[in-house]
Length: 284
Length: 269
Image (cartoon, rainbow over all chains, first blue to last red; front, side, top):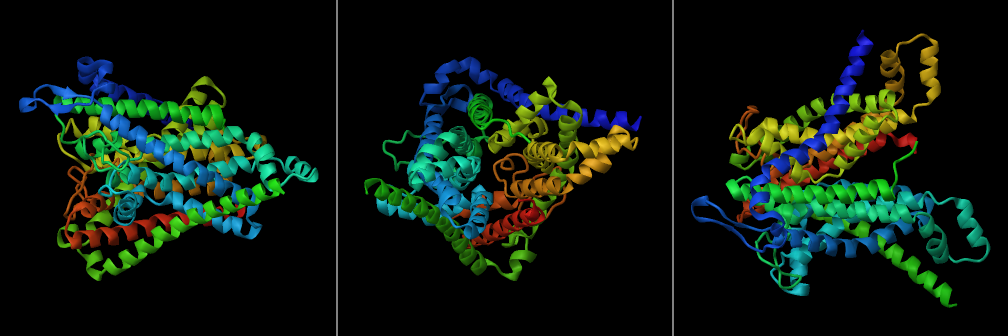
């Protein structure tokens, strides 16, 4: 009897977890209806975001925040990938056993720092540096992209390290035995062996960068304009939502839900691709 | 010669990137400590936000995170138990596992939007309960994932021994399997708590913020992280100082909980 109850409770919890993601899709889709009907797919490449008179109607297009999201993520990925690979190689192939552990902990702590801290630190310490090096007024796509990169590096490095670590020692040793250098072992043995995991970690980090809100909110400038150059301020989907979602009305509100739906859908595809195609289900 | 040189270059570059990574950690921690400690006074802890302190913010943030934990832990552990001990490889269990795994990395701002639609829009006011639900939604998939994985590590023989003793299934799960996986599950809970205590995005338009001390979860609720976001963008020096102090304290809390989690599992690697 009690066993039955216990089983039912756990089934209930699992069902709740199942419907959570489905429920988020359903709610976003429902609330986005008005905007979906009004703008359809034109929404994706319309640059205008203008409420109508007296909050009636208006034209809303997601092109600017969508572009801002993609651009800042792209910059972050270009900068983060080589450094994260370097860190993973350092941890698996170069570092002395004694420093691997403390170093790994340091990298994981870096990944645990809340994103709002990265944002604030970036605003006061990093934006001035970007400004003096590249011009502009400090906040913009480039600054957001760089700080986003700093944020995803430890995350990407940790997963890449884990997949590189799965390379059997025998494979590496046989390569060393025929005179391969460390680099050749990494390039021709470790990399091919852990290819799936490495690509998976890059895509998963991409998913994280796409949906990052707070680090970017401080740094991207939060203005609804197209960036002419890389140092110009613009906005992204999460940042627009963070700053303007709660005050929006009617059609504008519905358009915000539309943007949230796009972000959720894209993240879902990216994350699922990384986790199930490349990283594979963790087997125990 | 050429390949030996290339080897040296690559190894050097890897070491340099490792130093860059560690450099950023120290850069961030040092500026945070320097700015934070200089801005902390006794009044920072005794005053509420309205008087230039963070007392109500810390209480508010912990209240929401703790209630969220109290909701998410039983649900998450039970769901994890179902997936591993009852569901096995059934279609429903695999689908739930997949969706929950994806939810672990879902953008936190979208969870805020979702909870706004369900719990703020209908009542017309930001409220602490909405913040709690948003945090619990963030936490749930993480706990399901760790519970599922940790139960999988428990040797099948332990379950069989339980059956041999004539234990019923739920007794075996609760008294043998869950006990064996206790450390791993606890660590998962600690790490997910460390993650939600530092979250900002899901709170922005659910619980929002409150300058005053309150325990009324039906109204706007004070939040440390949302306050940092607001304070850092105010032009006056005092607000910025308070933002640094709050950031320093938040980071210390998050890192300490993380280290505690790691300490628990220190012998497992």
